[in-house]
Length: 102
View 1 (cartoon, rainbow, N blue to C red):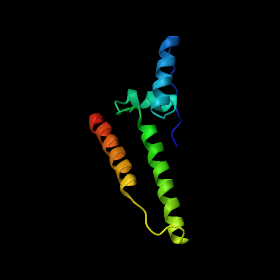
View 2: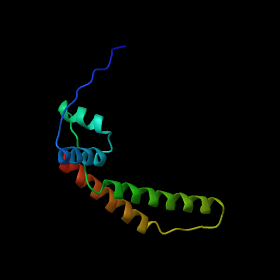
View 3: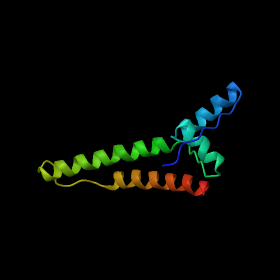
C-alpha cells in the first residue's frame, strides 16, 4: 500500500470560502473537490437538481402508496395522467439541465 502524501497550499479567506461552497454544491469533500479540479476531472454543479430529485422521490412515494392501496382493495381505478405529467415535466427538466453540462 502506498503512503499518502500531503500538499499544503495557502489561499485567501474568501478563496477558501468560495472553494468550500463549490465543494458543498458538488456534494464532495473539500479534498475530493480540489483533487478532481486539479486533475482536470469534470466538476459539474447543476443548481436545482436536488429539488428535482426530491420531487421525483415524492411522486415515487405517492405511486407506491397507490399500489399498496390497490393491492389491499381500497382503490380500483386511478387516473395516472397527473402522475405522468409530473414525471414527464421533471424528466424533461432534468434532461435539459444535463444536456447543457455535457
